[in-house]
Image (cartoon, rainbow, N blue to C red; front, side, top):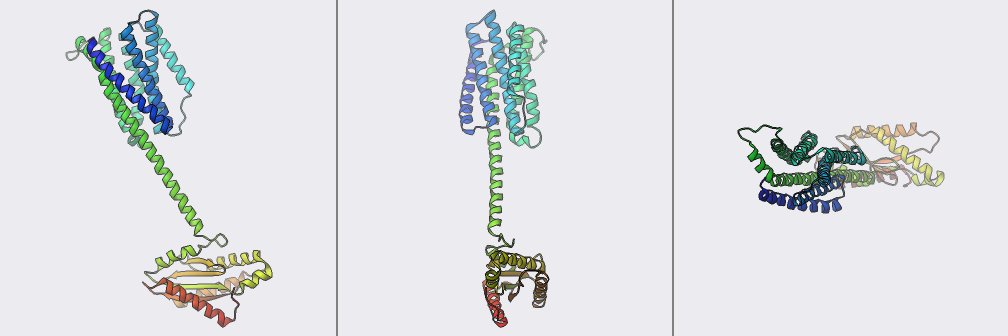
Length: 392
């Protein structure tokens, strides 16, 4: 192996992983997401594996120290791959259950101990480690490229695929070292050793792509969360607006809804009806406000049943109601008022009788809604005076 090339490529990878680890450590402190924590821990373990590698080549351990170094390296590398997979799974399946942490820890420890006991040479480490990594990352790549998760994890899948490809190439090269793989016309032992000397720099490029994919995934996840929160906020605002525009007693829109109804009816014209209960104050004084509220609710229900679904009925205030009826002519308007009076008579029961005065005005197509409303109001008061009714 070309040690100078190895040192240079390893220095490149170590520097890259330090920078990536520092970034994810800072990001995880601010974002506080499950995937951020998983990926921060993954890069910390990857850095630990590189530190073991550098110490191994610097100290050249033998005997028990070799086996300890092999176990530490293999365990941290597997943990790195598993944590990368965990973070990707949390992005792709938010809230989905995962194996308990102690099971993953146990699997990594058992794997590391087995490697420490049975591995005897560096090529064996290389073949096993560079075979296991692609196998762990392959399901993540498949999940990342499926359906909706592609937009979240597409870049991460590209980085993991690149890392898996370099690992597969390294496993092949170590296989040549072991004699387990036969050389070919394109790849002989000398070329394999040259590749192994410099493949850490190639890994560094793949790891930057993985880190970029993680950043994109977390950014897209947060953007979607913000969009969902914004949609919920808008829905809540709409609900509050609906509550603010609706009268709690009668269930009808209140006067805040009247301008919009008049604007909607303005282009085609409409009949505007101003309704006012007769002697409502007397009902409250004689029977109490609870009965008065029941009278208002009964009147509102009768108005709803007497007009069409497309007509807007508004409680304008107190015992005053306004009906905006698009496309209704004078004769049919009078029919609706007669129907309303008949319903009130039929609904009287044991309660006080409910009578009302009505004023009607026409809003011409393209006309002025305020003028039509004022005309209907004046007509209602004129009708009240003619009937000798007492204003509420």
